[in-house]
Image (cartoon, rainbow, N blue to C red; front, side, top):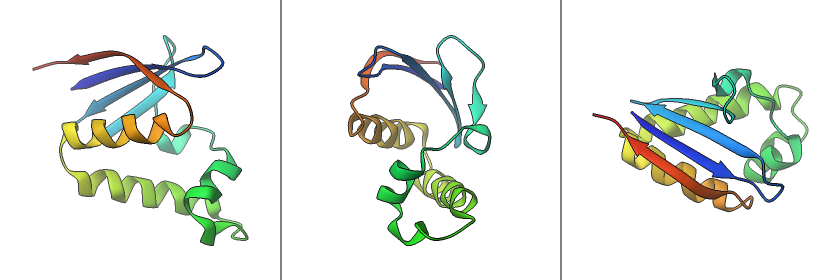
Length: 101
């Protein structure tokens, strides 16, 4: 298990927990939730998946694609690297990292 804490441009803390290929997200120190229960920003999602711009099911399809990508990465370390690099694009800075086990 790997836990990460990021700080955003607006000084909000984001908590990420990676357990195998399961990723939980949330505002630190609040409850962590799977991607399916997190609110997605449509503009950010469409920037990543432009073909979903006019799709009424854009959110569901984006989550499916994200989960498929996470599963393809396969290891906690590769998932961690992907998440760190992805969040850097939106101005998040890694502040804490813990690896268990």
